[in-house]
Image (cartoon, rainbow, N blue to C red):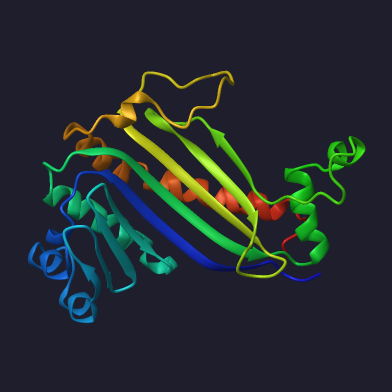
Length: 243
């Protein structure tokens, strides 16, 4: 039996709020001691304007728009630095109001066989009812997204998306979105109800949310990475042994 192969890792942190794109660039990061000389000398600006700034610095990519700041990496070794850079920027811009924060992780993996690849789709989205109802012939899963309540004291949700990989044949794409609306809650729902993508609180653009974002990035990072690892391993395990 073959071994499951994992590839094309990506991690990103997205802070939605109010930013001035032209003020955040490699020299600014350096002047605020958020990156070192090596990263600064290797940095490459793709776009620098009032509407959007995009640049690469070391192993990560920064994109700033008026409504969002995103830092991402395709290098597993850079994940902690991505988190630290976002913390550093938010601390340097304490008066920039925020709305929501998203921690995102994705990967593509190739199961040990084509049968295992089909098995994952069949277990996530059973096909029998569609065939027996004569609705679809040879149905196949194209996309499935599940959402659950947060296991902590913060408002928001967790989503896991699974698709056939569009980049690697007979492979699977798994994406995890750990979404925080940057509020604290006394309790989480204990029963399933109507699915909600967010709340009215997500439209609140306030400076108070910066403190909660820093708290989340500092205290919830390990829980996020473990949750993402578990989700990926769970989906891969639906195809059988990974040895």
